[in-house]
Image 1 (cartoon, rainbow, N blue to C red):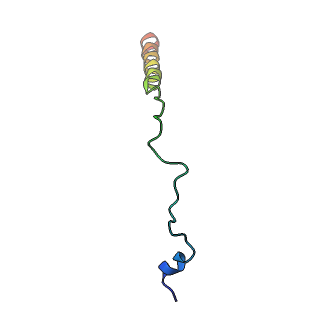
Image 2: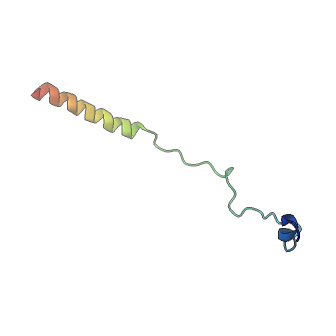
Image 3: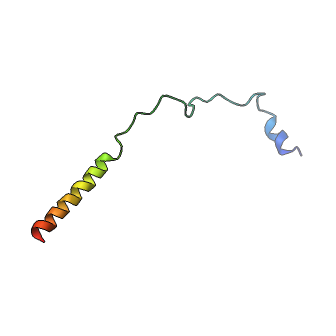
Length: 58
């Protein structure tokens, strides 16, 4: 019986490596996001509302 290398090699082309049709990385730069300031703004607004609620009704 032939070894594993011979078994899978018999019907492969000489250069079996194909060029990537969707190369990874190195492409155009990704657009910059807005960052985390909207999340921090919402958290800060909730904290301010909580503090105001405690001051007025506490």
